[in-house]
Image (cartoon, rainbow, N blue to C red; front, side, top):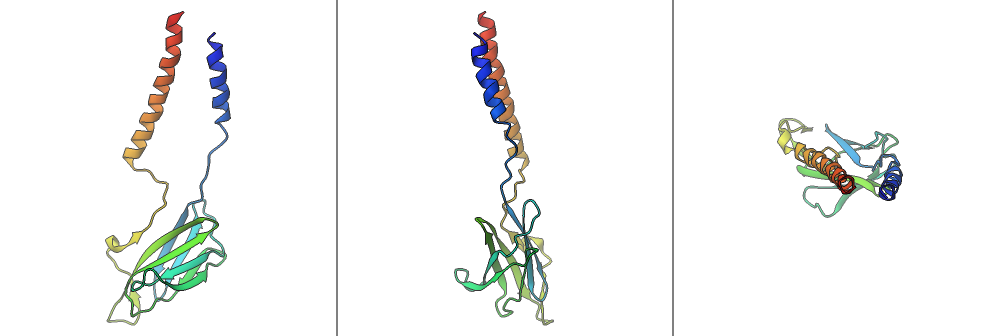
Length: 162
């Protein structure tokens, strides 16, 4: 009688051991010099080669300012309009995967090229990171433990009825 419940559970648990799913997130790094350079790669580290890029200027965030394509290594470089300091948005998408990054850009009046803003709080990167905070990790561990306890109590119930 006990095996009527155990065999289907064992079979279903073996079916669930198919392997880890690996979604394609995208990471974009940027650098500000006389131009803005980005590097777009999947979470696995492979580059977004020949991916379409759209750049939005600070004064018209709903209108595409520049269109382009990344190179084979996922790099894209452009020189923003120096008369438009602010937050430039760069969108890279390929095959349904992509990211939008916001890059702060300001012009130092004492020199002819933009300077990287030293204050890191001014940098805002949209994130698709798969990193979990401690509260989420604790909740996941608690849910797994609760599942083990529930399963053990379920089978313990049948053992006490004999």
